[in-house]
Structure formats: C-alpha cells, structure tokens
Length: 454
Image 1 (cartoon, rainbow, N blue to C red):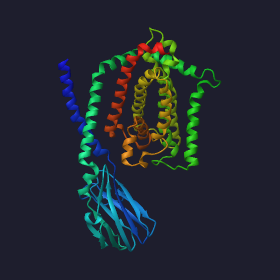
Image 2: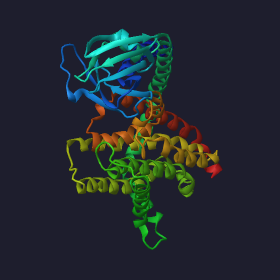
Image 3: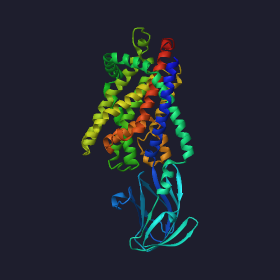
Image 4: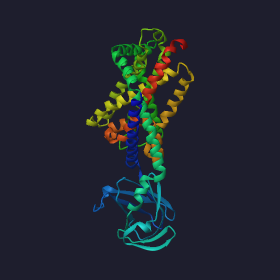
C-alpha cells in the first residue's frame, strides 16, 4: 500500500509539471490578439493595417485589414484582429490630405496593454507629427500613400501572456486540480475497464434491444418511426426561417447560413435526445431492472443506440444538403467518425451518472431539461463564437458540446483537423474520462437500491 502511494505521488508530481507546461503552451497558442485605437479626422477615408510575421517580410494585401472611417469629426474606435505570431505593423492613414488625431492605443490579448503610437512609430512616410498632448497624437497626413510603421514587440509578450503573477498562480492551481483528477482517473481504471468489458460482451443484445426500442417508441402512432425524422426536420426548418428569412442572416464562414446551421444543430439533437432518454431508462425499463439476471448497465447504451439510428439518417442528410449546394465530400469529412465517437462518449459518460442519480433525486430530470434548454443557446449553434471576446470564449469552451459542434463545422466548412486543437482535445477527453469514472462508481454504489425506489 505504501509503495502504491509512493508511485502515485511521483506520478502526481510529474503530472503537475506536465500540465503546467501544457497550460502555459495553451495560453500562448489560444490567446486572441488585437490592436485597437481611437481616431478622429476631418476627412472620410479608409485605414488599412498591414502586418508581417517575420523580419524582412514584405507588406502584402493578403496580410492586411481594411476599416473605413465614415464619421467625420467624430472619434471612432478601430480594432484589428491579428495573428499571434505578428512581428510588426504598418498603418496606412488614408489617401487624402487630412488632420488626424489618434489616442488610446492598446494591444489586447490575455491582458490589455496601453501603448502610445508616438513611442512605437519607427518610420513615417508622408506623415508629419503636429503635436503630442499626453497620449493624444496629432498628425498631418498627405495624399501620397501616408503610413507609419509600428514596432509592437516590446508590448507583445505582455499582452499575450498577461499578468505573470496572476497567470502563474492560476496555471499552478489548474495544474494541481488537473493532476488530482488524472490520479483519480488512473486509480479507477480497473473498475472502468470491467464495466466497459461487460458492455462490450452485451453488444449483440444492445443492438437488438435498441432496434426494438426504436420501433416501439412510435408504435402507437399512424406514421410510426417517421415521426423520429419529421420532428427534427421541422425544427431545422423553423430555425432556418427565423434566422435566415426573418432575421436575414447572411452567409457565415463563406457558406449559406442553412449549411452552417445544420452541422451544429444535428449533433445537438443527438446529444439532447440521447441524454434525456438514457437518464430515464431505468424507470422506463423497470421490469428489467428488477430481474436479477439482467445486466442493467446495458440499458443507457440501448437508448443511445436507439437515438443513433436517427442521427445516422441526419448525417446522410447533411451530405445531401452540402452536395445540393455544390460542396462535395472531401477527405476532411472522414473525421466525422471521430466527432461521432466524441458525441457518443460524452452522452454515455454523463448519462451513467444521471440515470443512476435520477431514481433517488426525481428533480434531476427537470434540471436536465432546463440545462438542455439553456445549453442550446450557450452552445454556438445559431450564433458564432467570434462575436464574443477572448475571455468569454474560454468560458464557453468549458461546455464540451462546444468542442463537438465546432468539430462538425471544422469537418464540413473550415476543413480543419482535430489535431489542430490539441489542448481543447485533451480537455474534452479528460472531461469525458472524469464523468465516466464518476458515473461508473455512482452506478456500482447505487445499483443494489434501484429495485427499491422504482
């Protein structure tokens, strides 16, 4: 026993160091960076910001961002989103003779760093400094391609890393918590393995029961199983009409709104329906729970598999819609298999806990319904997460369905592989593993009392 504790202690210390480095790397790689300032001019014009990512690079249109100044004589805030590896900036100040005032320069990343444009200007072309009062810089601009080159390197590191003391404390705390969770998972591997082994052995029975569950769910209606497909289709049409026709939502990520929308709402349909069904499965199949010889741990998987039949139909529906709009299948679509596994793993892990607890805490069923209703809007299904700031993006990413929904969009729209999100992938699977361990332990502890409360 002492030897086991010593081994776990050593592993724990190693994991603390590992996760500390992971969180530090994550913070640097995931931080959003932007350059912001306020400007007032006596002329309407276009202000173009060029950026380079290495010394000696040329300024190109491909690495530039336009913003219009369309309110003469009024202060306007200009905000340019930049890549994290930006090296230097060039700000083109329009194409007319003008008097321009600039103030409140900021680099915004994990922290906001106030900067003075006067201090970071290294070169000026057809630009003359008229005055500098505190942080307000007044410039005279000619109509011969005026620009200033800005060296942001001294402030870049602070903006990306944030307050070093606060971040070090936060990252250290996160590393310790993550390590404790990892040790908890490692210490429970044996129980989880036995549980999953029993489910694997009953795979044939699961498929058979799932088929029967799918048929009997709509057995009393005239249209039968067709209702399993009609309801989601009507929901998609309703949201499409509200957002695209009513609210006039245009293309998102350069694809029609309906294509952008369906790849997010369809995995949500599967998750919400499977979680609701699996949570109440022991009450629905109470006659099997009371049979001593039946392995009731199979029942949540039966419900998930039953809902999976409908989800597979809608995956085909996605491909048909995309093909109809001229977006044909490609190699990136193969990773849909990975995100489908992710969705099954998430709903299975969570439902093991909820299905066991709901028998003893009936209000949990209502709580789950509320969470699913709120969760729909807290997951970027009908809106894009790029609309919010970096801090809130990190908060929303704590929702594991964020990973799946954006994963479906990466598969069909952005054509980005999941390996490009290593840190969030690690977080997602640690979330699932933790939920699975808690679910297995809860099931084993509460199982002997199921028959007494049903």
